[in-house]
Image (cartoon, rainbow over the protein chains, first blue to last red):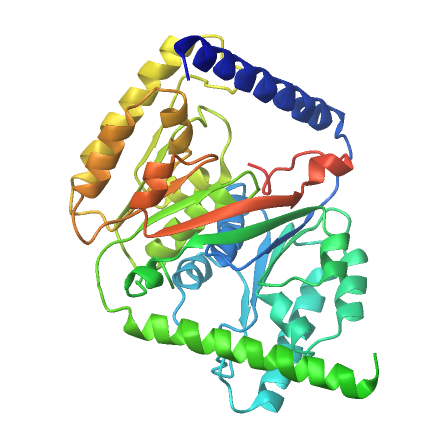
Length: 203
Length: 203
């Protein structure tokens, strides 16, 4: 491509980006509804739970009231929980020693329902500004908790409360209810290059 | 679909998922290289910086040494910085009052180069376990810092140091160098529904 064409291409790209930005700025300026948000962070890539916990850190930095329910994680080590629970963040963590290869699904189901019961208490309490339901999506997929119960509880939560839900394969109805949905796609992952999971990065 | 077909479909799905899981488990088991990781979190969706900060929270929960360089953010409010800097995390934040619509690019470029100079000091110091370079990608895109300098600095960092880079449109060479690349895609965003950005969620 000649220099002239390159410059023309760049100018066109810039024009397209400017137009895009103007459109977004206009939509942002028009956005004037103020209430708590429902965020769903799904997809197969790395960074869903970390984004959820980053949001808890963010809210805590503004002295907001937050709480975390960890589905799936069981009694695995978790750096975020270490730090945030030291700072007084209420945590409920499913404590069956749950794993992906569990041999006792009925016990897991009970633990999931207990975690959801705790989540429902917090989701009804206007004291909380932001609640993280980490890896909730699997509980619905596996039939451990009822989708309708989740949708109703979320829809009827206090108006000012924001909720973040993480996990793969979020149910379509959950995404429909959400205000923001991000899908984290794995372009590549360290383990594919033979790299071992690492403290501080992977847990 | 008849019940029999439904069950057969479910069994097939389960078989496919099991095969997929077995493949991943095998790759994970084979992954035995132990060194710091380079993570790139890119794409247009919401959750990139929050994932980066979540990772800092995670590492801090294991009492690791961490540091954060914030490109772009300027002197905007930032809940994560409030909390993490209270906890003693070293921060360098570009302080030009930078905005996307800045009218003084030469001043921004200087601020970017100062931030990168601080980043290079930390990236050479084996004292640090995890360093977040928040929104670095734009500095490369806009020509404020040199891609080659970034790539060389990252490639020559201490072996045990992990680095997380966030921002849209990460350069291909940066993604090539990375161990893990996640792309955050926006399925939908609250502002499109007329919802105003919110403290504790959006900043």
